[in-house]
Length: 174
Length: 191
Image (cartoon, rainbow over all chains, first blue to last red):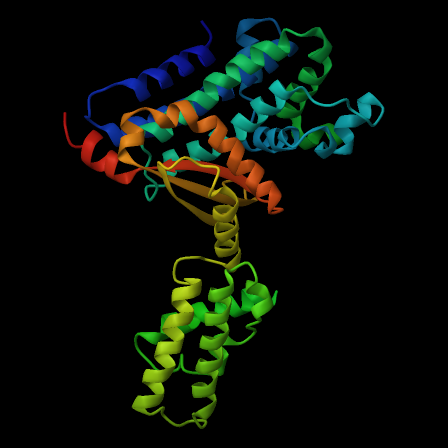
């Protein structure tokens, strides 16, 4: 089982656990873990596109950065018209409408990274179990959407573009 | 923008109002333009206009380098408190937060279920420095107990996003549910 799936399962368990002990900390960990689930989902898929050797994949995975990934996710969340020119250039300057599943994955990434930031660093924010469940649902839905979109050959190229931009960000301009 | 300068002046005056009378100056409402607050209800616009005029009337009466009389302070304070009550610069960091909250509530009033008891907004920058808006949906304890958030968060998110697009909002939108009582009393209380 992949690290991404492990994190998603853990996030679900953390948010469902019924006892009230260390609840605040646990809900924060659930939100943070939900983010890391989608983070690993994308870097595992991206790394697998580049290398097949398992240990080298781990090395490649370390090259992903949260800031580049969220920047890319924001571009894709807003639709094909919002993508920077260097990303549409390989498609002759115009990209067909992005699959809705992919824009939802991008959106979930943006939402979860921001929530994770608050959960890990902002003690002034409090989270209810309902709030945390919503964030875990974002991650869970993103897994479903990702598996759907990558299984459709028609979206193969745009998924590769998304993963390449997630890894390389603005360096793709050069 | 003039509205943000006005907002800053007002917030500055609030910070002075506890210890000095320097808030009783035309500068406290400098750059006020009623046109910036057309998003308020008509009666609120009227009350705001009258309060600012009343405040300025008093503030202009005070000669330079002289103290205000008790009557002037009392009259000025009433007008000032009314302005603060209408605009809540003590609560909203900027005028955009107030405007967005008012407009979103207006857009969403008939579209959200009754267990969503309040909609609040806060502008700022997100963790990567982009302009952001946090929308807090306050929900009842009962809704939490009945699992209504889990069942209904998607249509609620969609409704908030659509409403924000309708009012031409351009910030990154982050939506949260809030039920502090349920959190503190029920879930945190019993092991």
